[in-house]
Length: 130
Image (cartoon, rainbow, N blue to C red; front, side):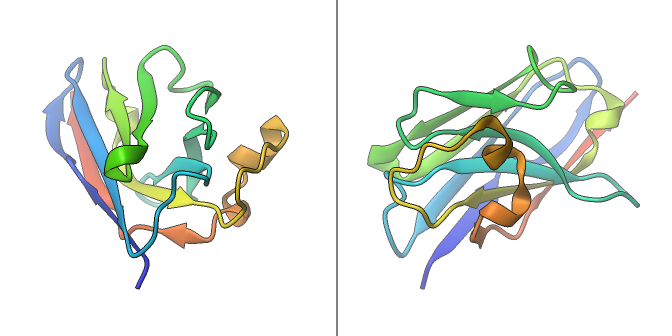
């Protein structure tokens, strides 16, 4: 059974940092693109960041660029989201996701579209207090 399990969420003050982890089990994702999305209270799910299967190319939403860093460790079958300088508007449930394509290199828009991801974690809550 394929599973993505997020961890590392919690309550932090504005300006603080958190590091989210997404550990995959059931199969290897070393050849798959992975992404992080979030769903703020009362809002739609939105793209946060993505990393190509190569681990070289990354994508970020404008709202987190320069503050968040996505990375992956294929040996551990794990993706990470380092979140610095957190703001109250970053409060959301954060989800990691992986696509099904093997070694696929899409255009920018591909990585930002949640419908291109086939595997999802259950989410982890991040709350940033002002």
